[in-house]
Length: 270
Ligand code: GLN
Image (tube, rainbow, N blue to C red; front, side, top):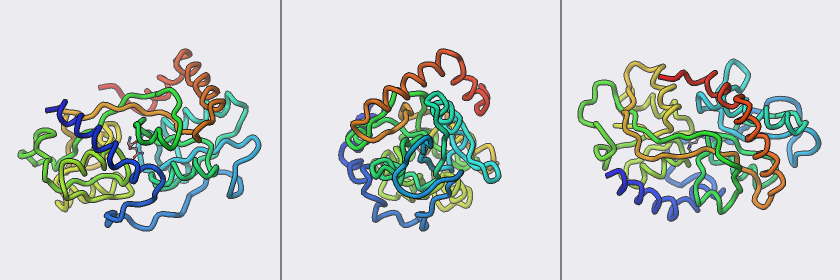
């Protein structure tokens, strides 16, 4: 079953991701998505092309433990990795918060130098941006209501009302197995809708699922992952020099143990 789903998923990526991911904006079906064009900008700086010693990271700070708000600050694994990378390049990191599907457009327009957002490397995204080496392995998982005994694995969500975060790989996967996909800007909103019984399941990244479920006793995460994924940093297409610089910094972070240290700070091993 898993193999079949993977194949279907890969097919869905090639057929739908150009539209969903390549910077074409929101899907017309995005009926649950509120206006979210405003960017919460951290640090000093002006709009437009990035210059000088500031290194701009585009992200969607609704994705614990990778990026989330702690008071006014955006923190998390991705932020710390990006800051370490920026530092190794002698630059100061500036984090810009935006909708997940605005990240690639921000890179393409030069508003951001990098996209770091628990972003899964996919062939379709590779058509519009370049990716660095991967820095984390992840998977998509299912969240259901704590008292749900009907859904026990990936096969059981077929045809169900599935909540996802707009424009994510979870969105693609869900779209492939059901016609009822409810799209939210925040995974948190999807979990809330689930707890309220508005949808049957949420498909989202594993660590994010755990973080969101930990705060909500009405839901639980199924163990069975149905896609294995890897996260990398996205940069403007053709910017090989930047990719190489970041890869060198990532290699150093891996070798020194710093990367693991950052991950361990936010994710406690089971
Ligand atoms: N890993 C998923 C993707 O790349 C979700 C990322 C996110 O929501 N920040 O589509």
